[in-house]
Image (tube, rainbow, N blue to C red; front, top):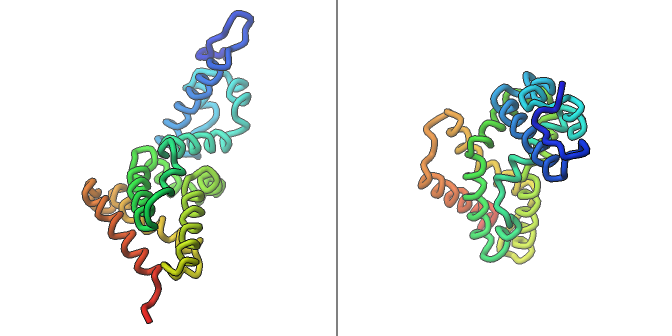
Length: 217
């Protein structure tokens, strides 16, 4: 099978830009197939055929299907994040930072690709447990939980909060923000409007911080 999509310069070798474009094209095809057909049904042969590249071209870029899926997930997550993600944690009170994060995470988690990826994981993780490991490694939730936990530790040290297990609390905050809106977006209820999502973020942050302040003595 010939490489039909890879433009070749004089001398037979693609330029760096051309090679990058071909890699992006393969990822475009793989993303469409994974999200539409699932991980188990999508084969390397199908990706190569639809991308119109030889299997040797594919294997030059991706070691196997798991590596291809990891690259797809990484690119989806990367495109959902704002250019300067670190700045979201800067400036303002703990409440203001959490509210910024909550609103951003809600919009990101409810995009078509994020929802399709979530459906794929729910449907196929039992058969392919390595998928969960890929998402855990490539997803933004790990970094977000780490940052939130650090912020909770600082607030607790300053006496403004009383959080005994910051990492545990951070994980639960992420679930509180995303869980129900995502379920409703999947059809388990009426999808939320933009106004409802903003109120959900505000109420979730308020409830979470009230719990983190501990019992009044």
